[in-house]
Length: 277
Image (cartoon, rainbow, N blue to C red):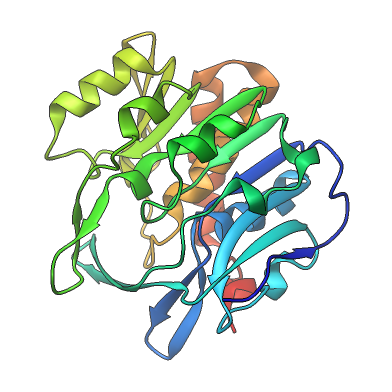
């Protein structure tokens, strides 16, 4: 395990946008690239003009990724880096998890980062618990839920599984974002989220999304696009949604903006170039 490192500046400044979760190694055909919701959030923040603050963890095989050198990053050391293999078959993605980094703790977070304007909780595999979430006092608290909905079988194949603190964590949220595929096996949880969280967004890939505000569901369609690699699509959408919602307070406007923005980013051939190693 190596020590927490800080890249960038402003360790005492209250963040405008703070994202927390593991940085991952995503295995690809010719090696691997940097991944995780935090990494995609940094890419998006550049395009949106947001100053990103990152709280993350990875092993010495990744270290402090160059992607974070131009942002404010606090990286917690770990013996291993969370490592995924993503397999795309007929438009559906299956995953294997080969290693998991240590859970994030509040010891990683500079004290001055306690009160961000936007807190984006972005777990990829159960790494954020209730204690971590409740430490913050943001103006807007949003989360991409996928990492709290994942477990693995004995062969390392990712399957559905709930974090032990999930019910208490979602009570802290202003916005919950998840894919329809995340909850396809647990419709009751979907209904509970719609009751418990003021704004829920269920993404449907090229089909757009469903926005639920105070239990009222409304669809926001998107123009179908042929995208070869959908990895990170939900993370791009979520970052764009949270940024626009913070500005406007209108979930429908935020959803329309995030749909259009995500489509544009995913069609850009240079979108992932800074994730390469």
